[in-house]
Amino acid sequence: MPDTEHHSLDAVVIGAGFGGMYALHLLRGLGLKVRAYDDADSVGGTWAWNRYPGARVDFPGGPYYCYTFSRELVRDWDWPESQPDQPSVLAYLNHVADRFDLRRDIELRARVTAARYDEAAQRWQLDIATGERVSARFLICATGALSAANRPNIPGLDRFAGECYHTGLWPQRPVDFAGKRVGIIGTGSSGVQAIPVIARTAAHLSVFQRTPQYAIPARNRPLDAAFRRDTREQWPLLRAMMLETLAGTPFPSPTRSALEDSPQQREALYEEHWQRGGLGIAFGTYGDLMSNAESNATLCEFVREKIRRAVHDPDIARRLLPDYPIGTKRLILDEGYYETYNRSNVTLVDLRENPIIEITPQGVRTERGEHALDMLVLATGFDAITGALTRLNPRGRGGLPLAEAWAGRFSTYLGLAVRGFPNLFMIHGPESPSVLYNMPLGAERQAEWIRDCIADLQERSLGGIEAAPGVDLEWGRTVADIADQTLFPRTDSWYTGANIPGKHRQFPVHLDAPQYFATLQQVAAAGYAGFSLE
Ligand code: N01
Picture 1 (spheres, rainbow, N blue to C red):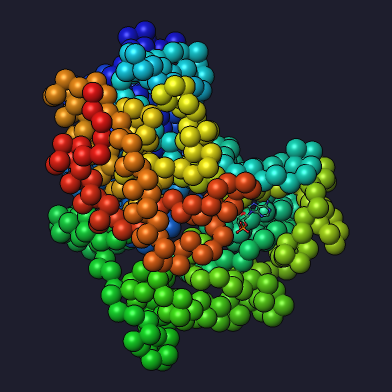
Picture 2: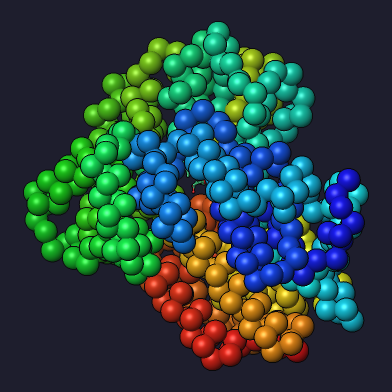
């Protein structure tokens, strides 16, 4: 059992991924009594759960998907590949936990089952699944933007008699596909990464696709000594660029419109990026791909043509062609995804023409017949961004549960705080840059802001901080106005909440990260403007 001295804390952090571990490190640095709780049996957050075959970083600057706060950490860590795989990222996070001696304040296999704010005491009261009860002045929810698995509501799913795994809750032990008839539902990033790997060993793979996706070749490659040397030497410059750019990469953002080039010039530029691999084709070519439908259509058609050429059977190729603006569903990095459909042991089941009726003990029954399976993989994604928070469902002032407060629309101040939930801070909360920014860097910057805010309260002997009435509405308008200038809200995706039946449609990302982080600085400099302090 945990030591009783932990029962009354200054701060609790929920989650031991990138955000939670750094928040723990920073708050401990203030001299606070702080402890992190995580349901997983390892540190690493998303990287501890998503162990499915093929999982890799899909951020445009693979080796820059890391902490930046410690130059020594950068100096001592070598990323092996341009798009690091899940075991590498998990090894990195374990290294961080050891290097900064974080483990002594992290409780694993310890889900927080309840959190309620005690208004009189100005403290959060928490129940932990281990039976422990904890109280803390501050609650930091580093619960992950893509951590609440979406188990599809398909009739009969519980009756399936074979092995069944969700990609986001993948078991630690090896899963063997050899000789098995495997079915996979879902063709988002997880499905598209897993499908080529599973197809290599399964006897047969049936892919159940509801919506086709655009995928760009990752062309993952080993990083050489010269890259490592340059990264170390130029780190201050690279980091400064990361802090300034829209996506938190050390690459300048293009400003030209795709329509300024001739079709031949565009084709040549797209082809150059396609051959190089990675998401530069969308982030490093033209500045208006995500805001101008006509510009976006030029890249859509380029990728569709690649799909037509990659897939031998024109009928299968046709079913794989997406028809919405590229990038408005998360753009995917793949390794031989489309070519996988040329294999004789892979079948594409197009659910738009042939929907699933039910899961039976033996497999998946669609309108046109039954697909017999030994294993079912659910690559069906997440209740993104708000899901982990509403499942935690903290109760704020008056005992109001967060899920109720957000039943219509979610609302936050700065994507960090929620009115009616004093002393609660979110990392990668809704209405922050979160999933469309370099997530480790975003977590770092938010955690540093939270640390500074708490230090300021301590200095002024204040016990509570809460978003003031009205500021959340104004913040929501700011976030929506920026999003409405882009193509993102127009497509059904997990960004818009459309993947979860009954979820309110609301775009949850602040798309102008430089403006976002500048606002955080201004709010702090103005003595935490927009907050009520007591
Ligand atoms: O989830 P998704 P994901 N019946 O929501 C389908 C990050 N990530 O886990 O498109 C049938 O994208 C659904 O269909 P549709 C990354 O940000 C990062 O793949 O809704 N199908 C879709 O095809 C990513 O975007 C890495 O029509 C159903 C799929 O399931 C995010 O996580 C790796 C269904 C879900 O796709 C989520 O990706 C992996 C149903 N009832 C993921 N319900 C990195 O490498 C859902 N689908 C860092």
